[in-house]
Length: 227
Image 1 (cartoon, one colour):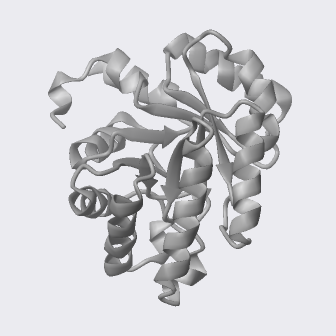
Image 2: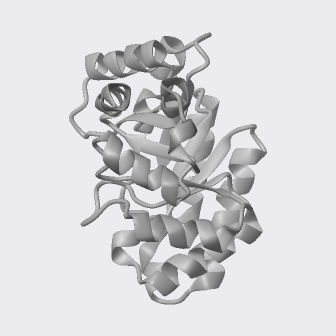
């Protein structure tokens, strides 16, 4: 994407305004929702315990409620992830970001990876919610990233996502490019993890990211406006 054509409003509409901290308070999440409404971010992204609360806070604003499943490790059964996703959607979530089982990827159990992606994507889409698949690229080889992206291009969740932000590394331009080039438009790419300023945000968008996960959305917009 040519970032020279972006406006402040378009940038804001690409950002999932995020607070996934274990010690986030209800007041922290209320503030997150207020900021999302003020700046017109795409969504608030929170842990699932706050889903119903956020639904109330952003009602009528156009801001989506996003939450996570199998977060941040992805090391639980597919059934547990599906249940978590379905419960969050029932509580008012518009989008679910779930974490793949990285061990299955490393072990080359691609049939299990695909089956899980199919089940969670179907659970979300069947209930009218979006689905994003978190790869956690810091633990994967470039070949594994491409293989995962190729599976997603066939299963068709809404987004594939670089990182949880809780691993040993976050989004990189190279990884975003690999993901974007592999899916060839079949799904979108979300970059998340370590994106704290407009310079890094812009680099991810130029590499092909169409959604940005960040807790520093306000700072990103302020720097964009100052250019």
